Amino acid sequence: MATVKRSYDATARRARAEKVRQELIETARRMLLSDGYAALTVPKVAYACGVSVESVYKRFPGKPALVRAVVRRALEGIGPVAAEARSDTLDAADLAALVRGWGRLTAEVAPRVAPILLLLDGAAGHDPELASLAAELEDDRRSRMADNAARLDGAGHLPPGLGVDAATDILLAYSSPQLYDLLVVRSGWDLEQYADFVSVGIAAHLAR
Image (cartoon, rainbow, N blue to C red; front, top):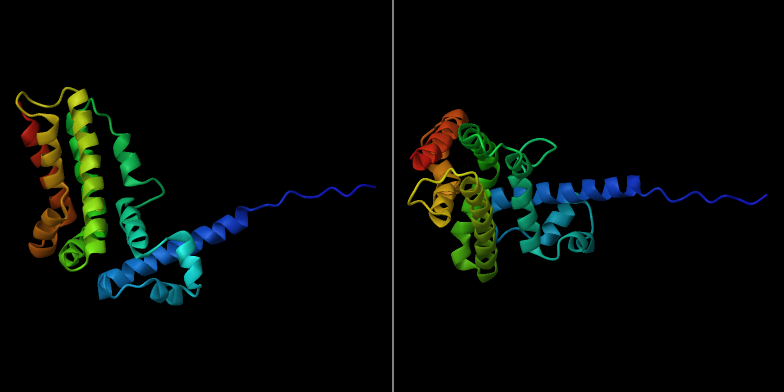
């Protein structure tokens, strides 16, 4: 009787690999915030997670790639669905609901990503590699806000005299890590106040 070979089930292996990947990202995040960019190294992250340096490099080809993953994870916010994906599902036809949603998502993501972005910006002047990464992350942020501004324009929400480029700048300002740092970290605002400030401010600029 012929033996039937079972197909290899890679589900468990993929789950383990993803768990290791997330542990590397979380460990790098903690080290980055506690020790700074210069002190963060791939060998340190590997040692802390109990894996080989080669294992880290297989997933992240260098420290900038690892830090980029830290930022992207922070931008996902809370829950199984990334904040960006949730933003894309907001009804662009309903301006009030749209800007309220953006305010809530900004307040959800900012505590996770703003400290990292501010740290990278502060250290970028001393490290050309980091300066390149910080510029890339800022370009990504501008691109995202440009997409949001285009949604506003497509839904007819931009008032006369306010073009997509200017709307992009407004959205960048209200989602900036510097604004979060000023209002929440330094001035003690709670996240609900901060979310309201963001949504009301954006709406004010769109008032006709």
